[in-house]
Structures are given as structure tokens and as C-alpha cells.
Image (cartoon, rainbow, N blue to C red):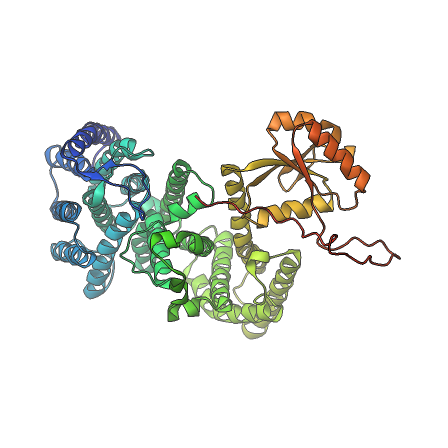
Length: 636
């Protein structure tokens, strides 16, 4: 049933107001009957919190849905299934069902809904449609259930997804998708106010299972369309199938990513997937220096941005949508790989793990630990993405049937040629975490040589008939950007999150000396996370360096400015990193720091400094000073 924009706003306010009213009532009831979530070692919250918030979510969605408008037959079936999932969650909250029992209940409910006609449309074979729908319903239901691990996260992501589905209904998706999507958005928004950090109530399994199943069912309903409006050109065939499968994945990418990360890391470390823990995406981001509030808001912003871009491209270019989601998948892969480096911190002895967990690696994990294989697979995907994107740029976002045939003939040649050149130039021998200018130069040479070889082969084999010269120039540039960019991702993630960790709870320090010694010392601080020091600024007597920025840190002034800078920025310690400074110069700096009330130390060089023509001095035991080693930070 079609609804106007004004009606949509009224329905949203109705469900929002109902949720905002019912949630405090459920909080009061939970406290009155003593149904509270108690803190546990494997859970994130640290104080008793009211449960059964899913009741407020369920009623805030159901009451307007039942009494405001007529319900179509498919939506009635989906609503009944969501109600059954809500009851299963209530039973689990009260009696604590085993994971096996809960999974069987979810599978039975999903099978009954599929039998009632709710299934993915647009696939040629009914059996494939049924299997995919069952997998999707159960998978998304559990993904939202797993995502409910931090205050406001599951409700916030569900709100973003519901809003995205409503927008999709307005852009040409099924009209019957609009009303339940906007009602669900209002219900989750009203609940989120009380569930956001610090949470006054949790939704419990009754809420997360209800939200997950309803979102999964609504995205399945979103496939009930033959394409987008004629104004957008309409999509049929393979393109329509892409939209059927890609749009729901894009809308729910955050819960899917978190589920994949948790499942992989638990299998890799020998833990059961069904076991709870503090190893989710949100928990790892907090360990990297984000606050809980910022983590939730950041994940919501990512979900909203990805959904908005996916919906825009679904209206404009299905090929562009596929390329966009492929790029996001590659970035997600490397972000997930970066987060797995925290396994040693996440799975500690307090959580019931031991060192033997890390020795129980599966065959799958051993295969995935072959980095060269993973790098080659990623490069294959990026080579394909770059080539398809070059066509989209050349032909205004539309790839004709003739160009599709050209792509089929040439891509099978492009991939092996580029991979061979990458291997010859040594792109699979280095560590991506330590990528350097030299590595980028090798990438440039490999891309240029491979592009010239490809153009020559196409000229020899096909006489370059139908191919555009600009196309291969675009392809070379995009390949260079993507292959180089993905190798920088791990380093960018590490350096960015190290800055977040520095800002969280650290000791402000000054670095005296903005030359090579100061640069090396700052790099050591950035690469070594086991310390409590936060570099605030540099001090250097060279007036030309004043005001300059070195790796994001400003040069404040000379040594005479130290007392004023200490007071202004709350400096606690200073480190002299001038490798060539004489003892008298260092003593002078120590005296200035002492007058300013701040402790000062000198950073010792790793190797002795020997001037040209001089003999390296012999070191006594007294002179053998260990280079700077920051004191260990105690993990909270």
C-alpha cells in the first residue's frame, strides 16, 4: 500500500512515541520483578541493567502495524514469523536455551515463513531460492543477535537499515516495504534513546531475534521487484539479479562483517562460535583507543554511508554498485585482518583461555596464513575492479553488450599478465605492514610494464579492434591506485589507531630535537604500543623549524620556551633526541626542564655515532646503554 511522505512521517512519530513511552515502563517492570542482566566476565557491561527491552520494540512495531493500515498477505506472514521469533527470544531470555535448541527453533520458524511464500525473487531455480532464503533469514537473525554486544549498537544499526529500506521502497522497490520499514525505524529510534551508552535497558534475545528476523524478511521482500523505475533505465536479466543479491548485503554489511570476524577468529583460535565473548568489532575498536560512544556512532555512520551509496548506485548503475561493494569487501577484509592482530589481547587467561588455544589452528587458518596466496587473490579482484571501473568511467557508467563481450575476451588475458609482472617485480615478497617508497616504486614499474604488454598483446591478437586507448590509460592509473592503496591499508590502520590509543589515557611529553633523532624517536613511539606516552610537540633551536609539522606533531619553539609550553600543554616529561648533542648542551636542557618542573631524559642512539675518519670507540660495560624502551602499559 502506497503512503505519502507526510503519512510516513506520522507513522514514524507514532511508533517512535510509543517506543519512547513503553521502554521506561519495561525498565520499571524489569527492576520491579528483578529481571536484570548481571555483569559477567565475558560481557561488556559493568552494572546490573534491565532486560526485556525487546517487549517495547515488539509492541511499538506491532500496534501501529495492526491498527493503522491493512496488512498485505506477504507482510502478514512475515509479521507472524517475527512474532514467533520474538516468543522464541522470550523463552531464551527466561530459560536460557542451548545454542542448538535456539538454532533449531530459528530454522523451523524460517522454514514455515518460506513455505508461506516469503522468499528471494529473481532467481531461476526455486530450490536455490528456498535454500538462499533460509540461509539469509537465519544468518541475519543471528547477525543482529551477535551485534547486540555494546550499548546502542544493534538498535542503532537496525535503525539505519530500516531507514535505508524505506528509501529503497521510494526509489522503486516494493511499495509494501515502505510502511513496515518506517514503523521499524521509529520503534528502534525510540528504544535507542534508553539503550545508548550508558544503557538503562537491554533488548535481550527477544528484541535482537525479532529485529534480525524482521530486517532479514524485509530485505527479502525488497527483491520483489523487476527493477527500478523507467526513468533509471530499468534493469533486467543479470543486472536485476545483481540488485537482488547486492542491495540487501550492502544495507546489512556491518552485522555481516561482525559475524564473519567473530566466527573466523573463534574458529582460528579453537573457540566455539556459539560461545559469547568480548571479541567483537566494537570491543576491538575500544581496545584501539575509541570510546564506547564513539565506537557505536562510528559504526552507525559507516552503515549509513554504505547504505546511501549502495542505494544511489542501485538507481544509477548496477555495475557501479557491484564495483563499489567489491572495493568495500576488500577494505573490510584488510580491516578485519588488522583487527585479528588483537587476538592476543582479546583472548586472555581471564576469559578462560590459555596459550594452548593459539596452538590449535585449523587447516583453514593454516591455508589463510599463506599470505602470498591471499595477496594474489586480492590482487586478482582489484585488477578486475580496476578494469571494469575504467569501462564505467569511459562510457558514463553503462557497459553495453558489445563492451561486455570485449571484457570477457580481454580480462582472461589481463589477469595472468599482471599477476606475472607483479610476481617478477617482487610484489609478493614483502610485508604489507612495512610498505615503503621502494615498494611503491616497484608497484609503479610492475603496473606500467604489464599495461604495455597487455596493449601489445591485444594489438597483436585482436588488432585492438573495438578497444579504446583512453580505457587502458584509465586502467593503468586505477590499478596503480588500488594495488598501491591496498598495500598501504594495514599501515594506515596501524598508524591511525595508534594515534587514537595515544589520546585515550597517556602522559603528555615533549621531544627536544626536531631532526633525524626526533623523527626516529617519534616513529618508535608510534610503532611500539606498550607505553603511556603521548607526543605533544617538538622543541628545536633552529628558528626555521618553528611552526613546522612532523608526522602530525608541531614544533613549538626553542629550549627557552620549554617552561611556558609545559604549563600551557600540561607536559609531564621531556626527551632529548639530539643524537649529536654534547654533554654540556644536554645538561643545559636538563636545567631548563628542571626549572619548568618536568623530568627530562636523553634518548640513547642504537648505534654509536662515529664521524668520518675517526675510529669507533670501545665501549665499556658502563657505556653500553640500552636504547629507549618505553615502560609497559597496563591493559585495563
